[in-house]
Image (cartoon, rainbow, N blue to C red):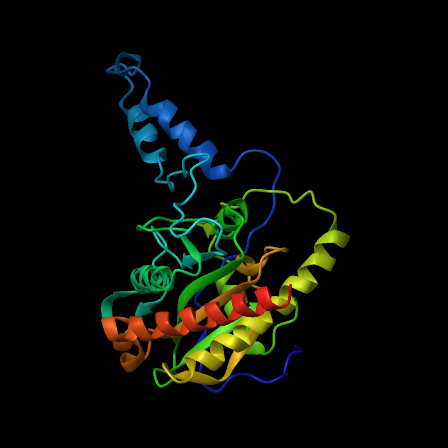
Length: 312
């Protein structure tokens, strides 16, 4: 779990998670949205003919902010009641496109992850052994804490965040699986965490909400057990995936990724391939490629819950 102390040779860059800082009070972007709405609602007659400069200043001061998710709205859960719940998180979305294919400017990570999440959901539901929910089933932006927060509110038994990797070296290819660690397994994992954890910051405005009230001691104890379960599932997924999709040689990596920080829910981040690699990206964007990825997840999920049931 320690830093290997050397730089990666494939030039991999981090593509999937954002840093959140905590501030008391309302979210800054919600305040900005309310202010813009109030200004827009001002009666037109209050701006007289002698005030064109004021009108121009108001217009220039308006800014576009992400729409707030409707309070209390939870994703739909599909499947047979009473079965374990798997929440699939399609990375990025909305104003955040994720990584872009340098060889094909029209291919965006946020679109591939949504297609993959839907395919994984469909195959898991066909097995009939689990229930499934998606954190997003359309092109929308969710902050990182909201992603695993939704899964926790639904009572998820397993959380899988889907992403596509990216590297300056277009020869880099293959899937990898990340689990949580406060100490990155290598410098490549550390760079992934640094890049992915910045997803909640837009134009210098932190979009994450504040404060965790739970005791740090309880969090630590619970999270250690959860991290062990997450690592076990990552190894299981690698075993099932290696016959179906290309994997990185050291496919299981650890990093301090915000989206994996639910203290009581086994969680992984699945980098399904490199969007910067033409062969990988074409596979990810094909029906056959998505089916293979979904099949590997389905197999791993079935074994994971079968083992859990047998250990009771």
